[in-house]
Image (cartoon, rainbow, N blue to C red; front, side):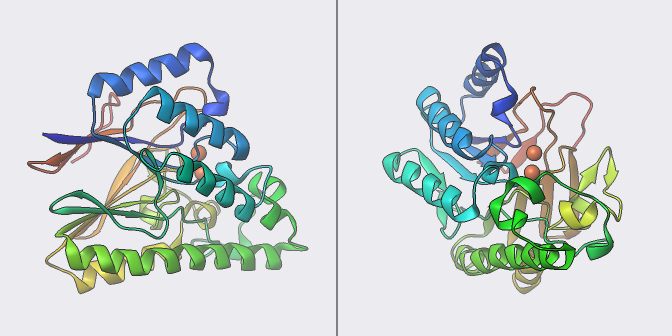
Length: 282
Ligand SMILES: [Fe+2]
Ligand SMILES: [Fe+2]
C-alpha cells in the first residue's frame, strides 16, 4: 500500500513545543511515503524555518504549495526566492510544486500552485472584507486604493492559473489520475465555511476563480481521466464535485492545533480518509 499524508494550514508560528511533538507523532503513526502540504505553513521566514524543521524531523518527501500567510511580512518574489533556495538545499526532500509534474505512482501524477483569493467570486470588488493580507504582504499593501488592490488580486489569480495550466495538461497526457495541490479553493462551492460555502462577501477572498477555470476546462477535455484537488485556506472542511471526474477536498484547521487532514491511499486503490472526528467524506 502506498500512502500520503495531507496537511494544510498548519500555522506553525502559533504552536508550542508540545503541540509540535504531537503533530510529528501523528505523522509518524501513519508512516506515509510522502507529505502533501497545501500552504499556510507559518509566515515568511518562519515558514522557511518550520519547513526545514519538518523535513529534518520527518525525513520523507514533502510536496508543498505556499499559502497567503507564508508571504506575510515580505513580498511574493522574496518569499518564493527564499523557498526555492531552501528546496535546492534539500532537493531530496522538499519540493515546491509550482511549475512541475511529479510522478507519485505509475498511474498518478502530482501538480500544484498556491492560488490566490482573486477577488472575482461573490460580491467581487464590492466585498467589505478587509484581510490582514492587504497590510502585511508587500505586493498588496502597495495598492493605492480598492480598485488597484482587486486588480492585483486578479493578476495573482491569473499568474497561478498560468502556472497550473501547462503542468496539468502535461500530467493529464501522462497519467490517468492527477492530484492537484493548491491553497485557495478553486470554486465558490469548495470555499467551505462552517459547513456551508462562504457568503458572497468572503467568497472573493476564499476562491481562486482563475485556477477553477483551468481545472474545469481540463476535466471537461479529459473525461476519461480523474482530477483530485486538495486545498485549504478557509479552515473549514468540505468536499465538492463540480463534475464527475473532478473532486475538491477542502481541509479544516484551527490556529494552534495543527493536525493531519487526510490519509490518502494512492495504491492499490485511491481513497481519502479524514481522521477528524465528526467529519464524513465520501
Ligand atoms: Fe490558513
Ligand atoms: Fe490562507
